[in-house]
Length: 252
Image 1 (cartoon, one colour):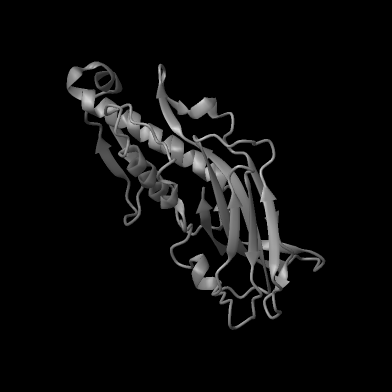
Image 2: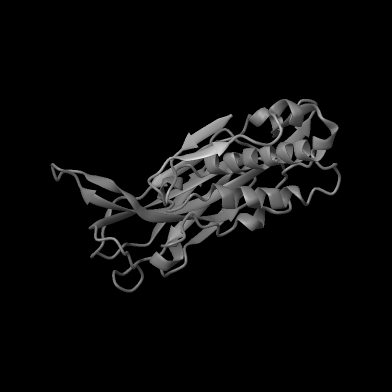
């Protein structure tokens, strides 16, 4: 009837008495109907958030905080816009609300636009599941400002697919069974030295295997910058953990 655990702020063991209804009570008793509805919809928004995280997985390691909660709250906001279904069955459909994901930052302390002072241009083509990104010429000391003392940096571009969450006979699931979830393309630029001018660079991305993108698919174009340092042998450059930043450029 008790649980014991450690927590920040004390070196003692915290003891807590178990309380509240059991899982079986929540599952069956009529007075917990609203609770069951809330649990179901929370699971749906979390499922939608996972699909988005998978779509941008090539840059999410550059985050400096646990952004899952922020992303899930956005998914919940979309869910609340469902005007048709009853509570406990509301779907997460992004068709009208994709713009809410534009500019989503994976960082709180060092956001991408605070490091790169010139805008990154891009064009997207939903029908072809493709995008072209143009990184402008960057001059050290003027257009880039890195707080980390590492000699190299590079950009990562990624284009991925996220899937709506719909309600069916057996509860919530990814639309079309998630058959198009997690399709992606990504490109890393070459490493550039922080003291050299970074030349204007255009990069094209296209997700293979997707044609005539259906409405329940949201395409996410994201960009990240990460720092690098020569490895022990000095022949290759290795990324530096927790030294970088990323954001979603466009959801379309």
